[in-house]
View 1 (cartoon, helix red, strand yellow):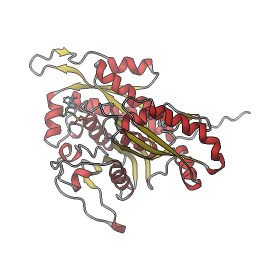
View 2: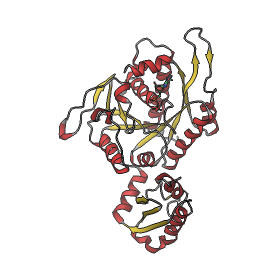
View 3: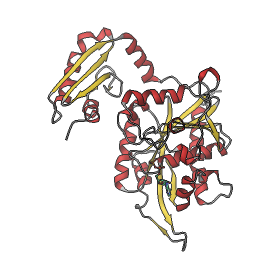
View 4: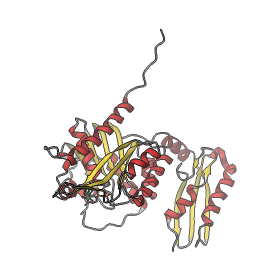
Length: 360
Ligand code: ADP
């Protein structure tokens, strides 16, 4: 099988820069990665004062990639760039925020189809119902679902300073690439395009003022996700998983990705947890039981709750009328409200300054 960018980045991710103690990938030192057939070329950026000292690190990177099966040649170039080093230092400590947005929260999953977008949209609506000023950014540019989930079919207007006005619905401000390009048209995205689309959707949209911007992340733990986790000023990440083992293995990868980029995990959500038969009311655990809860416990992460597997959740989502927006609070609406409550609690704790201890 041909080597992919992801394979190369994975191999490089095992190389730790002794100066920072972090992987060369996580600290953003790898730039200009190009893969041409079986030949790989990339640059390793270091601060100028390190100069040739970084040569062993460059060799280690080259060797790690050369060890991949099917690689014909590897060329790693050492580049010393003060500005890049400064920018990286600033971004690795805390990437610049979005003006007027208090907290950016990622909703992520290790793989597609586990209900990440459904959780993101319903969580955002539930947070807005609690009185917060909330935005929903559909960063899943490969498969934008917000237009369908929220039943939005019109294009956003241009507002002040050439920026886009987010579309308002269900008490939320929202933006999706699906509003701009036809969601049915398959698009081929390349790495740099993905990044610029995401950067624009954050910076060139009139989001402010917001208490929370919920970001529906692209599924998976590849290059785009890693860069996003690094570049976006995330307050924390919510990981969505179904209860079965296979999905949990992927969830673990997503957790590792955020931990690598020092983004706090706000907790795990178990989606499609229990199936309640609409006819007899019998409860069955189609995808197994309590897997995400056990994993949260094992990893000492908060468990944020279970969302039942219900036909109504899918039907309402497909109809562009998410259950969290329903007035009559059935079990599905309550499940999302509970989730929002758990998140809002964490945001409040994070916002509150540490208590001062006064000795008398
Ligand atoms: P992802 O963003 O992880 O790819 P989606 O949110 O698009 O997943 O959900 C995949 C499908 O599963 C959709 O058809 C959605 O309506 C359905 N779905 C998500 N959560 C539930 C649930 N709790 N009960 C029933 N159907 C669900």
